[in-house]
Amino acid sequence: MSDPTKKIEQTYLLARERYAELGVKTDAAVERLASIAISLHCWQGDDVGGFEGSGEELGGGLAVTGNYPGKARAVDELRSDLEKAYALIPGTHRLNLHAIYGEFSGQDVERNEIGPEHFLGWIDWAKQQQVGLDFNPTYFSHEKADDGLTLSHADVGIRKFWIDHGIACRKIGAAMGQALGNPCVTNFWIPDGYKDTPASRKAPRERLTESLDAIFSEKIDPQLNLDAVECKLFGIGSESYVVGSHEFYLGYAITRQKLLCLDAGHFHPTEVISDKISSVLNYVPELLLHVSRGVRWDSDHVVTLTDELLAIAQELVRGDYLNRVHIGLDFFDASINRVAAWIIGTRNMIKALLMALLEPTEQLKQLELAGDFTSRLALMEEQKSLPFGAVWDYYCLKSGVSIGSNWLKEVKQYEKDVLSLRSDVSAAV
Image 1 (cartoon, rainbow, N blue to C red):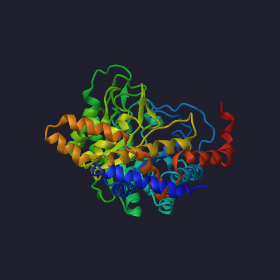
Image 2: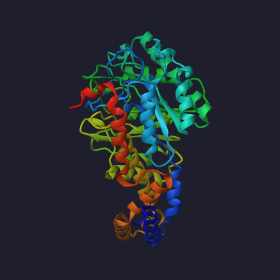
Image 3: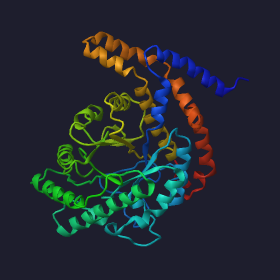
Image 4: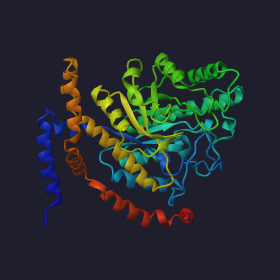
């Protein structure tokens, strides 16, 4: 019987020769890929439930469909699921936490009173797992957000509550950055908007500007915390008007020099964020990407290896933006195994980056500058059939993770041994 490891290495050597003919150094591409961290989102593991214990239903225009058994019900279960996912994803990555995922020890801690002490367990775990942490205030699933407005609310008291929540979250992000030795990206998204046409589009946006300025008034070392703001086209219950539109946050990020978060599912179905990257990076210091897959109105399907995913990766590589862009995922699917969803989405994001790194980028640019668009197109198309899969298998081998779809066997075994024993197993259909 042939040695599978030796076979993968031999196949890789042949692929390396093919790529070398175009001037592409596969060893360098693999080494660069290993340095790119993807921020996995904790909320895929429990359907955006969190651990507040308040009993609040998911709000803010968000919806999670499906009832696949094995949902994480406590912090230890969520961490166990994440550890299984990380073990089957090549590379060293990050975790993106929402404020509702703190460890509150059964106490009723209001969101404007949360602090780093509620996330010490996550910090210790992150150190053990050697992953970085990112953070998000939670402006939904709360009685003070039930009418669809938070930071843009006309009620001064409610607005102050959410401002204080944002201030507290920046401090938590800074504490994470300090403890782990790398900046935490703290991202602000709010669901504020109206179902029907408002009488004033102006007033809520003026209030939102004032609220954000109040939240960001304290300077925090960017080596500890980076602030990002995220736009959205519409949501359930805000079909006609969203306060934090793309234009609003683009202007805010430019004038305040904050990170702009582009979510792949937060725009019109005919828009793509790959085309926006090179434009906005002319004016903002860095970008945060929430990579998801929009399907009709729903922006949060598991990431697949689509043309748009590849286009996003190509823009990051061709524009030499990898050091200025933070890549995070944002989807939640309860219709399939949640651990598998993390693995599928993250591995696809990494695959897209590898494909982009294996392009003959400089040669393509030279052809373009020379006006030889025929050769540019021909080379772009021909390189699509180069043996990318051999390089991907080699990268997985070097990273010590399962090759091909073998990871699925491990997830199925984990489902049998762990997930199926959780109490929600009876919810399966």
